[in-house]
Length: 361
Image 1 (cartoon, rainbow, N blue to C red):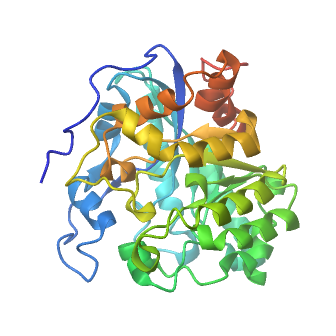
Image 2: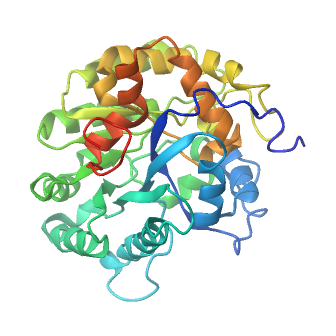
């Protein structure tokens, strides 16, 4: 197997450009038997074996690799839940953990990057009216950093698409569930957004949700989840027009913004992996351009933000190469457009007004 960093970029494009990375995780899976189980050969399992531990030290090693990462936003990944107590509130342990990491980063002892300046946690919104207590607990635990909820709706009839993530039990049709929607209705009154992770065939479900709740900010993760493995192997290109039509429809919902990234995960079925690293950022930029350019054209730069999705996107390349690919994609954009894509949209959506390097920061 090739070294995970082989083919990585050594020259950083526009190293002075301020970036807010609005999507990464923290976890410690090092005690899990990651080589066993029915999905041991899935790309997501391979990523976990390469990055079983991704805490502040590992995050800062990435953010300090050449690009000017001013701040980051943590996105839930079921890490460090409380081991005991009310089951509905155990997810608040993740926010407690991440807020502690953010406090360490904010001390300045480890550099200037404000890691986890925003926190998006998990709640099972199917709790209906009782969800309000969980949301309030997250807000209190977040120490002023809590910004929203992500409850993954990613589901497919073929478990080989999501691999180990198929065991997490996201039910078919979650976003249309009446109990889920009662809980979802509690977000906007508290000023909270919703990060949506789902797969391309599910985009019509998100469109219906966005239309039903026009006052709730919905952040669509990973350009809407193109698929090209499992039951969809070899079909990614053929499915592009359908994906594009759904994204154009979502763009007409002013409450929806989109994260540009996630294409380095295994689910889209691009050619690269730990066994075959790309030879530089240009190849990645060329492969991802149809998705990134479609999103920017549809949503506009004020509703798009580049994301790292690390460590998951390490499946394809290292952190420096990933951001070089993004910079290459928009090399000809105006300064104002680049500012929106790399920091401004993230700062506005996740209310990071005290971060330097974007209008108002």
